[in-house]
Length: 171
Image (cartoon, rainbow, N blue to C red):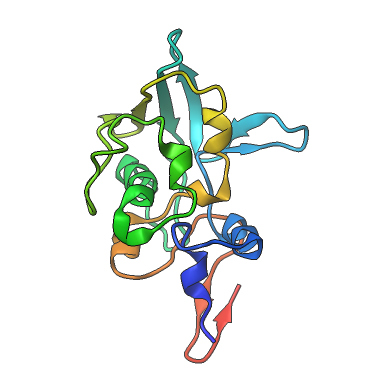
């Protein structure tokens, strides 16, 4: 039985799926052993005084298991696709504070996530949301390769690599 579809963060719904997802994929931020927010795929982040703008600088050395660099386009794709109606993500409501949440069409990107340069994105919220950085640590919001996901493949950047063989799935 092929369970690889449950390794796509927008399709996962059970605790066990999220445990596997956090092994195969990385998020922008994660919680360290003391419960503090720390970098995973970003070098740094900044929160504006208004608490409405979050700026993230990607770690330009971060790569997917296939060797491709992780790009700002991958980040925007990975977050935006939770709001696409066709994906029916059970965690989409957590991203509701991002501008453009209600008006997003399948296949498009959130208005509230902008590319600043090739290694920087800015996320704009509708209202201050104290838990927003913690939300981004959730395995649900792991970053996928846009190119591979659109081709139907699951390619992560986490500590474990997913390998598909002819008759079984190996982690």
